[in-house]
Image (cartoon, rainbow, N blue to C red; front, side, top):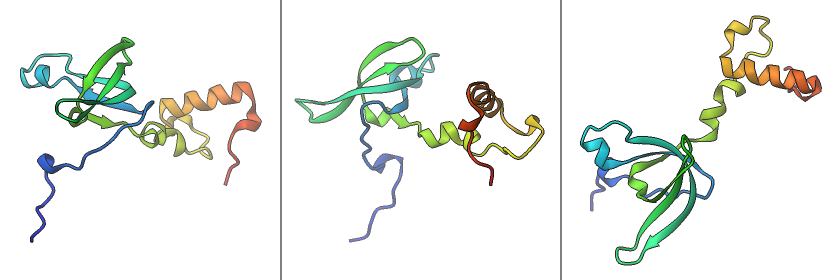
Length: 124
């Protein structure tokens, strides 16, 4: 039997854990072209809908600290911590010019230099 190529429609099922940071979409608002359809949130819990055996998620919308119940994983995507921290993880610490760093990396360095300069990672 030939294996069907993977498409958006046959995307593998993803499960999310409590505390995961995700982007999620209100599909009705999106398909109607209405504003305010995409949000960043934190997964609070998962549960299975009894009649359809569908796993749904309760998510806290972070911009307004608003609870959103029954979000379908089909309309959620994980926001990996590595992506959020990439600019800091790759900051050119040996560069004397802070203009070569992103504002987030500069802010992180200033915060840590103000607290304890021994907390900075060793130069390579």
